[in-house]
Each structure stands twice: as structure tokens, then as C-alpha cells.
Length: 635
Image (cartoon, rainbow, N blue to C red; front, top):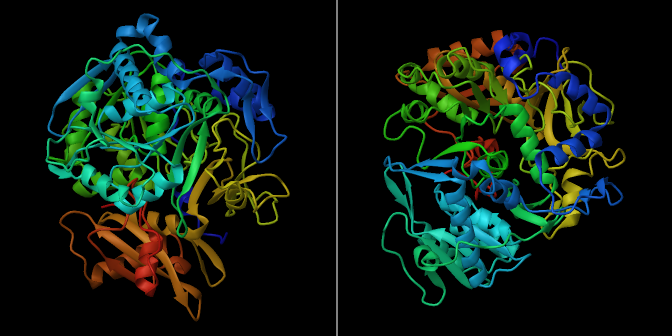
């Protein structure tokens, strides 16, 4: 780490929680509990498993490390996530509590009590049984952002089958690849999905995918848009026909803690997608614990995770986590700024949302539109905000805090991965915050920033982000490819037995973690290692820049040169004078070594459908290289 190149830490300041927030927190003594958990993480997770989860049969061993890195949690325990998410609630006072509020893009609203949801899940579970789905089979779900998506997930889990949700924007090839890898004989989809007033032709894409996935025998189609669709008699079935007059009683299958729950695919820069396998016991312990402590959910909260259920954020913190805790959630079908730029803020007011959890890319998009839109709405119901998906730059953090939270709502900036299952580095409401920092590893998570030789990095020194001890929500393997699992996540620090996250990070003098980005997103210029996020943060801190992406391109003199792309705020025009102004701004904020050699003004940036900037595509375009796997590219 070069002295002076520490934008985030240099510009950070503590935001302390109010006494009211601390007094009302689920765990007001969290920092002390966290220290205790660091000394004995197994005891911490054992206590949470007994506190938050019901077990048909108790486990006999909390953690089995004998097959490392294929760890086992809560060995011998029998449970089912649907029992904890629905069954136990309908047996008690939460039976008629609102579980889910859904608003369509056109304004239609549906409300489901826990009893309503339980009945719908039971009915669709019986549908799946009728189609021949049994315990251990895989079901691929490819739908829009509709309530039937979580219903299909829960129904699959209820009967002991494994769901593989494919985001409803993937291409037919990406869908076919995931169906074939999971060997799914049943696919659940929609005729179409609404997005910005137009339809996405999901059934048509599914049909094309199935020409490359002959394993599929049955397709269930939800009628959402009413558009005309092709039909294969004997294979295709309407959801409403199959559920008509079907029993709303269905037993929940007891599952071993280590039985598979779902597969969720992540994409690399090359090669086929990696099917991350999560299991029934540890996963639900992890997500219930983290959601309870971090977002401090109370019985009267209205919680909105604005992700898509098809991503891990949606699995953990839209579907399973909130339902396990008995919470009331909001789910919205459409695009953030449609039909008006204040659609989200109107939803917060309309439904009295108290906790809002979203991504930095959405926040920066709203920044670009200007603060007048959120400033129109008091949003007095909000008490907590959250961020997920990538590091949030301090400028976006402060904008979110000021214009959405009205300087009253602590921001829970969460770092985690599809592979981790749930939050890993995150504050809770009682932890003092620094804009742009994920703060501290969650209780029971032993994270460190280390050098290549495994020694701990000094304060403010860039290093490898590793996890030194197993945790319950961890992916158990890559579906069908255990060797790739070991090579991808465990080979770099095999001698120490640590999980390597693939991310670069630093820890400041207060012990707070700052995620720099993927190791692939670190640029080495004249021998200095610079994080793309750091330079991007400097660019976005300029009042005329809404969003930025930075890549390194080969340079004979310096090894790599910095190439920047900037989306300007509404009404701002790019020119040579502004280009020079931005370069000087980076020089001032970070240092001369970080000044971009080239800076382009662009209208859009290539992103995954979860909102992450695909810097490798920018680099491939600039250098004339093949684009590689683009299956996760935003449409």
C-alpha cells in the first residue's frame, strides 16, 4: 500500500448510533457478544441454532471438520426450512400476520398472510409431486419477480427436492446450461414478465432453451402477461390448471441438516457456471441469525429487500430469512425508476417500509437523477437502510444516508457472496459506521486480510481477504465438480486450510474492513497495486459524475495504464475541460499514480443483472480480446 493512496480511510468519519437505536436493538451488547463468538465460533452458532430453528431431531455434533474442506454442520439434525418459514407460524399467532405484500409494476397489489402462503405452497408442492418430483430431484425455476417464484421455491423445498432458480433475464443458452448441469426434469416459468411497461418473453426463451436441454419432461407455466405462447401438449401445463381444486394439505419432508436445499449458479470469466450447493441446516441458521442481528427485525416492521429472488440476496433475505423470523416483507415487480423516478420512494411511503436493503448501483442510479426525487418524500417510517452487491463508495453512502435516510437511518453495508450464503462482514445497528466500510466480521466469522505468504497484513495494507474458520451458511461444493470447488476456493491457502474469497481488502487502524474488489480488479501501475474501487470512488465523489468504472490496460512503460469510463449526472455534458478536471480531482483525492491515462464519457456500463460492473468486458473491448462468458450480462 502506497502512502497517500487510501481514499476511503482518509475520508472516513464515524457515524455513531443514537442511544435510541442502541436501546431498541435486538442485541445491544453485540460488540461484547462478537468478541465472545470470536473465541468460540462453534458455541455461538450452536446457541443460535437452538434459539432460532426448530429441529425434528436434535443434532449430535455442531461441526464436523474431518472431511475439510467439505465441512458438515449440525450433524444428525433433522429439519426443513419450510417448517421454520411457514408451518410453525400457521400453528401459532402469526397465522394471520401478513407475510408478503407484492406490488406489480402496474400498481396491482396482492397481500399474503402466513396462512395464505402456506396454502399456496402446499398446493404447488402437491403439483410437483403429481409431476413426479421426489426428494433429491432438481427443479429449475425461471420466472419474473412474482409471488409465485418464492412459492415455487418453498414448494420444492417442502417435499425435499432441490431448486435451481435461474434469473428471469438470462438467455436461452444460459438457461439450457443450468438445466443440463442440474439435470432438472421439471421447469417452472411464466408466459412472460413485465419490465418497464414491456414484456420479457420467458416462455419463448424457455422453449428455445429446451431444444438444447432434452432432459426436461414437464414445464409449468404461470400466466402473468397473457401473451400468446407456443405450447407442447403433454409437456406444458398452466399453473392455474394444475393448482385448481388440488389439496392444500401437504406434509413437510424431514431433511438431514446436510441434505441439499438449492443450487445457485455463479459465473466466472471463463468456463461453465459454478453451481453452488447449499444445504438444509446450516444455511437457515446462518441467514436467520444474520438477518435478526443486522436488520434488527421487529414484529411490526415492514422489510423491503429490493433484490430479485433469483439471486442469493433474494434467496437468503427475501424468501427464507424473513419468513423464518416471521417478518412482513414487501416485494416489487418492476424497474426502480418506472414509470417515475420516485417509484421506490413512493412505495416506501405507501407501505410504511421500515427497513430498505438495496445495491450501490441502484443508489448511484438515483444519485444521477438528482436528490429532488427522494426529497419529495419524507419516508418517516424508515429506521434502517442496507447495501449489498459491491463496495459502496463513500459519496453514494452519504447521499443514501442524507436523502433517503434523512440522516436518521444507520446503513448496514453488508459484504458476502453466493458462496457464503449470508452476511460475513457487516455492522449491526449498534456499531459505529464509516462511509464505505463494511465495518467488522459478523459474530462467529473469523476473517482476516493477509499477504500472499499467509501473514496478516498491516493496517491500511492491501491483501487477500480470507475466512479462517468454517461457518454454517457456506457452500458445500460446486454441484458435480468437487475438484473445482477445492481448486477455486481452497487451493490458494491450502496449507492453512482457509477459504479465499477472491477479494482484495484492507483493514484500517480501527480494525474496520474495506473491500477493494475482486483480485482481478486490482491494477498494478509502476509496481503499485491500486484497487479499481478506490479510483472509481474518487471519480464519483466529483459532483458531476454519477457512476464510474476503471480498468487497467497493458502499458510498456508502467506495466498497466488506468483507463476510466464515467457516466455523468443528468444535464452534464462531457468535454475536454471536464476530462482534465476529473483527472486533477483523482490526483487530489488519491494521488498522481492513480490519475487515469484515458477517460471516456459513456451513457451506460456493462453490468450483470445483479448490478455489478463487468470490468472484464470493458477491458476486452478496449484491448480487442474475446468477450468470454456474457451469460450474466444485463439485457
